[in-house]
Length: 310
Image (cartoon, rainbow, N blue to C red; front, side):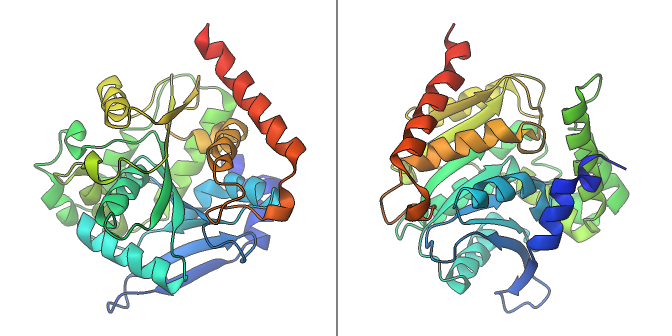
């Protein structure tokens, strides 16, 4: 059993933050699962979108830390959607149901791609205030599986899991990264055939982001320097697509830095959200922000960038 699953932090999270189930489509089988934590008075929260293998609770360390600092955060799990337009329409209905006009999105891998597609989908009536894209991509063709995307729905669950596990890091890993992978494997086991098939379909069906529709949205690109499922070419493409984006580089962290490098990830999230403090798009309770805190965060930002600039 993985260390994370039995850790006090995870057990505290599961016992204090309720998992909600919401249906917004006419199809009753399409159920959004989400954790909504932090002050309800915040109308522009940060929403976490998981990767193919992830469930809403893979972001539990972000939820615990950020809500402790006064942020409102929502981590969710997708229903079964088979194309990007259907997903975007469902997500818009979910935001309407939650009475959220605008949101900040943190998307990991597939979650990051869907976050960009949603920003693009709503560009005429914007719903996305900012994006944090973690180990993400802008064009599904990088996986070279666009031709198989339409057959995932036929495959049994064990084959789909094998495809997903093929992208997980192998070889010697530090204990935190090994624990993170164990936890993700455990989460993967909880997903059914249709959930996995639909996510892989969204991950691989032919599609790309149209940057001119979302160029005015503040973006932070978060990635790692060690082994991950993302190729160097895919990373370079993201930098080109968002030339003005802030970059949050982690020396290590693999595919799941939010699990195994949570302190660094949480710091970068705070730095990203700092630009909205004092505005109606703040994701934090104003009473929780002091001048000293802002100064500390700016110093931390400077310090965290120094090693990479040598």
